[in-house]
Amino acid sequence: MLSSFKSGLAAAALAAGMLFSCASGAFAAESDAAPEAQKIRILQEKNIVRGYGDDDLGLDRAVSRAELSKLIVLAMGLKDSADAAKSLPSPFPDVADAHWAKGYIAALEGANAKRPAPVLNGYADGKFQPDRKASYGEVAKILVVLDDKEARYPDPSEPWPDGWMHRARELGLAPEDVAGNAPALRRDVFVMLYDAMADEEGFATLVVPPEKEKAPGFSDYKDSFNTRSTFDHRVYQKELLKLINDARASAGQKPLRLTVDLQQGAYVRAKELALYGNMRIRGNRHVRPDGTPYYTAYTYLPVLNPRYFVGENLIQVPLKKEMDENTRQIMTDPVYLAHHSFNAWWKSPGHRENMLSPLYSTVNVQLYAGEEMREEPGAKNVGILVGATAFCR
Image 1: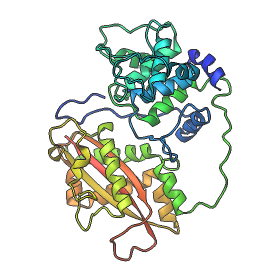
Image 2 (image 1 turned 45 degrees about the vertical axis):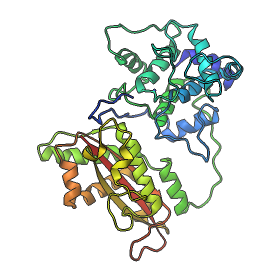
Image 3 (image 1 turned 90 degrees about the horizontal axis):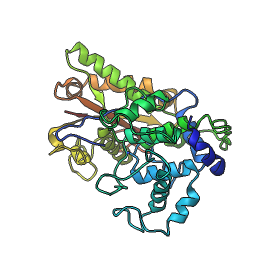
Image 4 (image 1 turned 135 degrees about the vertical axis):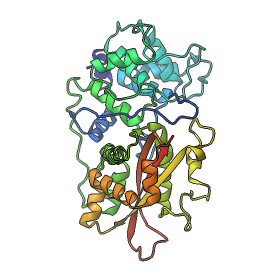
C-alpha cells in the first residue's frame, strides 16, 4: 500500500475530551488478511514494534507522539538517521537533548523537509509535545503522506482531521466508524501500519518460527488471555454492547457508545482486582486494594469529579486450574463470556440499573485473569477472571 515505504523497508527488512463528557470513538475492525496477533508478531520480527520490557507490548495503551515517531522512523528505514541526530541540537524546545526520542523526532523533521505535507510535525506554538497521546487522525495523516510523497493538505474548509480521515479511508487504512480525534491505541496503530505495509514483497508472508510446543496449562491460558493472543476482546466488547443496547432499546433508552476514554480506568480496575484475587476488597464492594473508592481510577478523565459521572459493574468468574471444558470456553470464547457477563448483571438489580440508566451515554469493559481466587469459601486451586465495566454520562 505505502509506496514511499519501499526503499526504507528494503534497507531495514496521536485525544481531545470535552469538560463534563467522557465521549470519544472506538476503533472498529481490522482486515482479514491475518489475525491481529500475527500482524503484530510480524512487525516485531521486522524490529518495527517493540514492547516496554517483560514481553509487555502495551497494546491497550494510547500511543504517544514520541512513540509514534519511533515507530514511523523504524518503518521508513531511518534508524541510522535517528542515531546520527542524537548528537545534534533538539529541533523543538520541549524535546530535551536527553529525551529518549529526540533522534527519532529529528529524523522525521529531516524527512518533512522533502514533502509538501510533513509526516509528523510540531504545533503552531513551536512545540512537539512528545508525551501527548496521538489521535487516529494523526495516524491516518501519517499513512496518507507516506503513501504519496506529493500529498498536500486537504481542503482547509474541512475540519481537522476529517480530510485526512477521508483520504485514509479511500486507501483502506481507516475504518468508517473510528473517531479521528480519539487517542490511538498501540494495538490499532500496529494493525493500521501493518495493513499499510502488507503489500511489500515478502512482508506479509514472513514465516514466524513456531514456539516450542508444550501442553498448555492454566498459567498459559491466563497469560495468553491477558495478552489477548487467544481471546478476541473486541468481539467480547461488541457482543456485550449489542446485548446491553438491545435491552436499552426494549426499555426505550438510547444506545450506549463504546469509548476508549474509559478504557484506562476499566483496565486498571479489572487488573488490580484480578491480581488481588477478589472483586471485593476485604468484603467491601467497589473499592480499590488501597481502600479508596473505585472512581479514583478515573481521575484522568476531563470531568470535575468522576464520582458523579462514572458507574461500575463488576463480575468475577472462578477458573478451575485443571482447565475443564467450561473454564476453557470462558477463556477462549468471547461471545460465550459476553452472554455470561450480561446474564449475571441482568439478574442483579443494581447492575441492571446501570446498564439501562438514561444518565449514561458511553461505556467500556475490560477483562483480566488472575492466578488465585482468595477470600471465597471453598476456593481452592481456583484462578479468577474479573470483568470491569465503566459507564459514563
